[in-house]
Image (tube, rainbow, N blue to C red):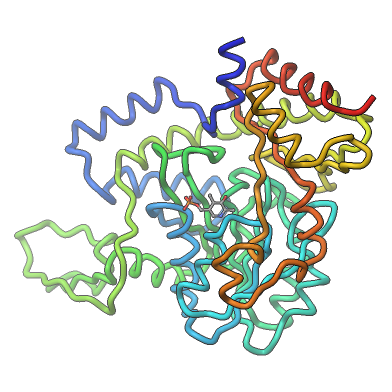
Length: 397
Ligand SMILES: *Cc1c(COP(=O)(O)O)cnc(C)c1O
């Protein structure tokens, strides 16, 4: 029982094994550099996995989103749209650059940005839209990309929940101008607790992102072309060279030890995601027909990688409201139920920016009903049964 409770209290997203240990030791033996060969390897591995031309590793998902907008040249006054149902990082990326951030209400079935609502929010100033593949299921990308083409804004995919997810045969993060991933400890794969990566097919955008990630450093060499330091393979001391800075940038680099773990994690990702998919299929099978619960819907053409398992509670029918359910599961069963996410327009950060509760009716209604079950690949069949039995025990019979 103690170990079952541990599984359901823990917030760990991925699992490490001997491969990650080995990879770390190898990098340690090479003095554990930052942004070295292991990073280049991981970027190549990740780009190939997603089916894109370029990937650049960075310090976390927040940096990936921010750098995408920096690379796109988002500036004060530009309009940036996202969903209110997301982690604050998605909206903060635009807000911290001084952009005008607005929200688009969500689809009541998938909880993702509703393209019909998006169409109503586009103005000539709209420069970027950040759809979030919430809980691991891709947004309606055909509709969003069609609007992008029509109105000329860039799509930045927040794929932080969706590494390995697919939309009509395309990988999450391969459809927009960029894809942004997080390797935080709770995500489907991790690089030692923190990490991120940006994917893109656009060479110019990639170069800008790569530059701003690392102080906009370029290197002039006598016989080298003017290039970013990351790409420079200078035999130090043999050539005259000096360092120039195109602009003032940031340090959002990843270390090699993280990247080496990332490459090992990536090899296991499909198997880890498959485990999540199976666990969630089992949960859905067992919760089917429990009155007052709405189970997650997986739309055709989607591979949903179940970063989390969203469950909607109708208090009148289920017999308990969201707050009481979350409290009872914790106090009586030792299970941590998530409340991802309190809509961003309810937060102080966005109330300060003029938003009010009730502005996005679908998200507002979901906020009162949506909970998430703790999903990770180390859940045992006993743990899953205990989770489901506990939910059923609270349902009105
Ligand atoms: C985790 C997450 C982020 C931010 O990633 P960090 O690595 O924690 O900075 C952004 N968006 C969403 C949807 C996330 O879940």
